[in-house]
Length: 79
Image (cartoon, rainbow, N blue to C red; front, top):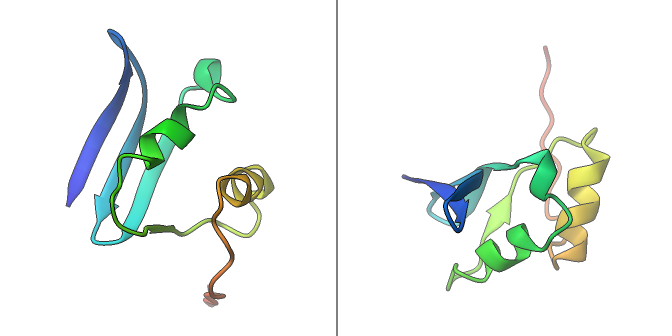
């Protein structure tokens, strides 16, 4: 399992985790969103990756679609 801090110069701007082909714990500080940081970070992966996003997280879904991710499967659970 890899967990990394995303840096922009000396400023910590976010985090990202990876296990096999899945990326998770992707957080970009609000101050640095919409600046292409996630797009740049994703270019560092030399293999295909996927991410699990809550269906209610419309903002993240839109961002990942813009970055070329496509919906793959539906996961259902019961509380």
